[in-house]
Length: 285
Image (cartoon, rainbow, N blue to C red; front, side, top):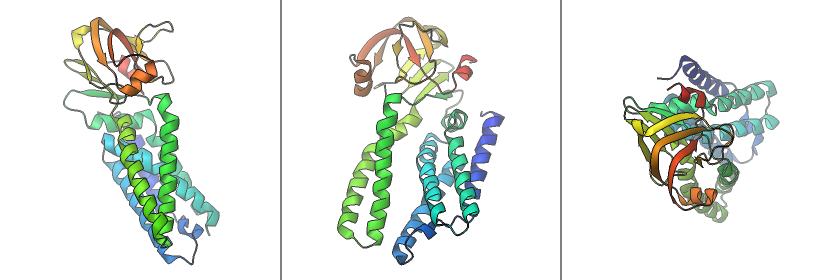
């Protein structure tokens, strides 16, 4: 069950997101007033995205976490852009600030943990893993390009520029088809404790789920600086946890992880590193 502080964060995010929509933000005033089609298109797009994030904030699930973390920043950027053309600047700033505070909350470790745990079964306890550093820049750039292309495509179609609009739709759909699963994988990276043992579920770095029986785990502790354990964190920041095993076990890596570690895709290890977003809580298990 989520801690009380996590519930408070969740309710605060919901409230701030609602306030961001209720306060007049004059977002559409920054658009050309002679293009009714563009204004209608952007209005529909804005409220559709806002509604999706609203549902994601109320329904705890790894998919909801992905949607909230991908779409809330987009709405926030729209709101800040709208300040320049707002007729009531203080209200527009307040609306954009509420959306920004919502984003800060949903990117916290505690908030991510409640969504991940919501999909757990029985006595299963899930701990979300940190995002591998090598993925941050390429995923961020691809996401930014997709957002920019979506905005341009909406503009072209509203302005009846069918050829560039159609091309933008096709390219955007292909990018979304490739990018969406990779981003969603980041919400499915968990260190899991079950009554029978420990599970490392990481489709980004592991081609097979690593399942360990409880008596096979010798220790779980903060990794020392001179550790020789295989790094299954993706080179994240902070001090990882080192899981020591009583016997050697097989680990199957994805091609991405094999390239990252400069090794083969099949390893035989007795210790490995993981990086939960809340390592202190893991150590209390």
